[in-house]
Length: 148
Image (cartoon, rainbow, N blue to C red; front, side, top):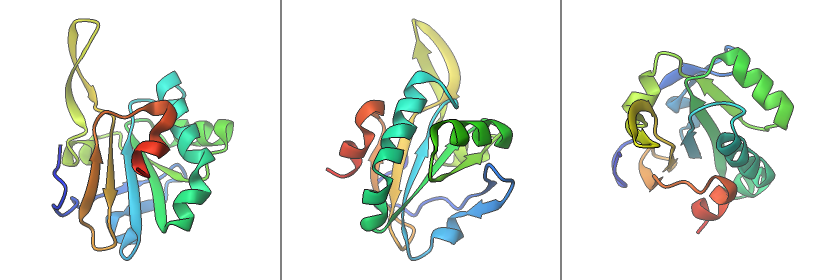
């Protein structure tokens, strides 16, 4: 994982609407950048809904929220619509952003080693510096982890 105090890697991607999104869009703002494995799966839905339910708290504290997974923009559109998510999701189908943020790699599931998304959240300050890293995400109570 990237370390607290380091400059956040620059990224460019497209959101659920095909609109370009980059780290530069968040200059002067605090950003919760979260990486998750797959739209509409139980853990990812719990995490997204926890962030959704607390979204106004994040805004009040000056934070934007942005999710990233390897799902397509169309999948993100369905996920956002079904769960009324108020924030954007980047479709990182080529894994560029996931790899830059060290959120892609080997993981063990049921004794089997596979490659996949490592559920990770980075908090980035107004100057683009990582100020918090959460590698062991509690999907049902992620907001509490972030606002501790």
